[in-house]
Image (cartoon, rainbow, N blue to C red; front, side):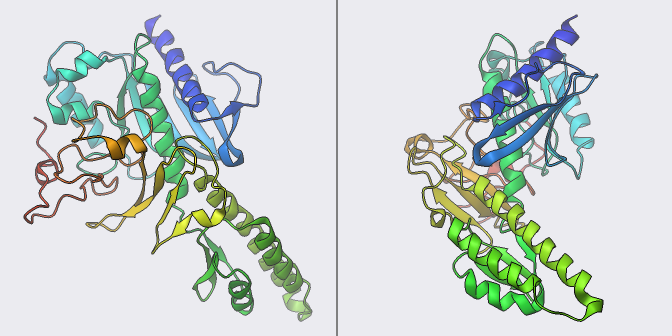
Length: 370
């Protein structure tokens, strides 16, 4: 009975996390095990589909691609006050870490007080969406009980990471473009559309409606050009593919142009500032800053949020305490410098480097859990 009840509780946590991020259900069904798919619409006209399998596993997807898999585990891993059982479980979990596919999190009944009794490293591992592990990305582990609101915050953080990192990984979006149209479109889309190589365009920010219409008109004119009969089908197919990819890229950038904290869209798309392979933006409402950073160790670009509360806070978090539901990449809890994040790909932070002033004990001893 507890197992079935906990499965339903975890499904409701996911639904509550969607609500916290501004998503509204567009189908009149309750989130029940084995029930019909539920559709949600959120900021940037983002459509997510929630599916709950007969085994209680919850999957969130977008455009037919899984974004997040949530696995309920009705076993109190931290309840006995001993780190031994949790050590063994974590070791098995990390050996089974998937190298591809969407983020996965295991949700188990655990409390705030139980976490506090663990060593810092193990405490961090027992409350992780899987993007701050010393060995690189892995399966997340989140405590949640009906008696504490922390579970909603943790699930919201997991969903926040899954949906934003999916888009951030595609920044800047690339669009296939015929070579004889490339120069014309880059000239027309100056400031937001550029040549990535001889056959691809790159979009650095969302276009305004007028900018998008101008480029669409040029593509339509190119599609209507006279070409030899043997090339007509290929010619039109290339134009249609370009148009479809242009709209897909615009939708991705429009989602990234919404503040991950309060959901407000940038008033001017030019507020999304492109840098070399990364971007940054600031919300005019809550003053949160978000964007992507490049890891100095492995070169991976990953998304971050800096809120006004983070920038005004003194000191550093202790393991995962106080994260709430806002972070994307996780601030390193042992680095000596502020604004230092853990790379979700290699597991090292910006404070690692083996040089004076750039030493992080967490990164230097990734296998130590005490």
